[in-house]
Every structure is written in C-alpha cells, then in structure tokens.
Image (cartoon, rainbow, N blue to C red):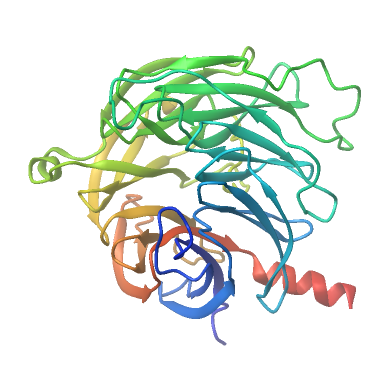
Length: 404
C-alpha cells in the first residue's frame, strides 16, 4: 500500500510583488512522510506575492498576504481536489504585509512591514475577510539606520492569558523598534467557555524591550517563554512571559550559529524560528498554538539562517528558560520559512525548508533521539519559495465525502 502523501502549499514572490520574483503564486508540492521525497504539482492559485500563508480548518481556508506597496490579504477555499478558489480580498492597512496568523473563526492578524501596522481582520463564517480591520499602529525607531528608521511589524504570536480563559495576547515582533508589542483579543464562546467577555482593549497593552539593534523578526512560544529570532544581531533571545498581566522579561540571548559555523560566515540574518516538541503530553500541537505551561517535555528550537545557509538546532534547558546550541545543518541558499511536518503512525518527523535564493525546497529528517535534522537528499524546484504550509488534504477529502 502506498504511503499517503502530504500536501504542502508554497508561497513565492511574483513578478508584480515587492520584492519581485519568478514565482507564479501559491505552488503545490507533495511530500512523502516516509522518505522525505518532494514532488512539484503546479500552481494552486495565481496571486501577487503570497509571501506568507495561514490555514483555517473549518471551513478549509488558506489566507495569503499579497506583499506589495499597497498590501492586501486574499482568502482561498481549499477543495479536496487540491484546488484553491479565491473567496475575498481586502487591504491590510499598510505596505509590504509579510505575515498572517489565523486567530480563530472570527479574525486573522496581518503584520505590515513597511509602516508597522498590525491589522486584526474580521472574517465571516465561510472564512472570507469582511468589514473594516482594526489597525494597530506604532511609533519608534532603532539604531540601525537603514533598517530601523521606524516601526516594522514582522510577525505575530499568540500567548495564553491565565487570568481569563476567554482572552489571548497577540504579540507582534517589531524589527524597527526592538520591541515585542502586546495586544489583547477575545476568543469565541465554546461549550466549556461561557459567560460574558471581560473588558479589554485591542490597543497597545504594553511592550517588551529587547536589546538595542536586535531586529526581532519571528517568535516561537513555549508556555511561559518566548524565543525571538534577531534578524539584525544574529542572536536568539529568550523572554520570560507573565500570562496574568501580559508582560515579559528579557532573560538573555545566545548566538544563532555555533562557533565553528560563525567563524567562517560573514553577515548572517536569522529568519524563521520554530519549537518542536519531541513529547507533548499525548496531544498533537498545531502550528500557532498558544502552548500550555508544562515541564514534562523534551524540546528543540530550530532557526533558519540566511548567510550561513543553515538550520540551527537548540536544546530547551532549565524548563524553557535557556537554549543550548546543538548543531548547524547546511541547507539551500538563503533559507526562509520552514515547516515542521510531524509523522503519523511511526513515521519520522521532518523539516521542509524553503531556500529562497536556491529556488528549491529540501527535506530534513529529524533524528528521534537527538532532535537534530539531517538532510534526506530530496529536493524539488520551486521559484523563490518563501513560505511552506502543510494542509490536511486527507481530512478535507474525508469531510467532503461525508457530506456527499
């Protein structure tokens, strides 16, 4: 019996995006979870510069930023035949939108790099964007003149609020101001979570200051800790989070590269950061989850490095408070986003890495004992890939069959 392949959607830069590229929109790639083999399967949707993607499970929807001077967000319905059908597009409230995060069935968050605005965009029951967005602007600058002339929101993350289960913190990494910007939002009612929503304000709740010149780009959440990739200082920072009042304390940082790699590398600019739990209390953790507090796990943090062209592996130590560098795994040229693809039924876990300047995806098998990814040797050509999104196409097909 053939191993069921997994569907990956890949965001690219296109000739009409800013920056431009040779991509054609959202590309379709199949992944074999046993061997790590990758195979291209054409273009799923032709849209301008979909440099970051996010998935909504019900109904199956993909959100894509359109990275250009006047940014937009486009939503697509995902079908069991792997086609994407556009269902709506709205402005993002700024330029060069570079990140989108699904916040639940009522909204998504978009980070606009050019003017630093974070937009909280309402969505309808069918997943399409609707109504005016709440635009959260910011002020400030940093010491790196050509990169920190003003606020530059680069990504968002979600953290739990232990004071009230209805609330979440939306945290934005601002590369231009060396800050994590903290906002509040409410989650929808559930059977377990009834009652009135407590008073809250989606405006700026506060900021977490990082060392001058950090250039925070992306974040990974690990319960009471947030790990931050510093694009400008080539370091990985650890912030201890207070979930009751939405504040954070910078604990320190470690180099994004091991000493041997750093010694032979010029300028290095970390891009994506992700947490991989080798054991997760009996439940699967989805990308973007606000992970619960825990001390009973073994974890790894991965960082893609543009310049060194590696993915670095860090061990989680001291119950999350400290990272220890373990390895640098060579990957393709200028690695951007990567996806952790978990194996099912004894299959190995993998990383699938987008090498932007290498015009390819590559797969790495995660060693189950060490957590260090190792090259499988499998590649597939994709023009200027910048984001990798696993989509549960088998689940979508089963749901369509049940409704037929």
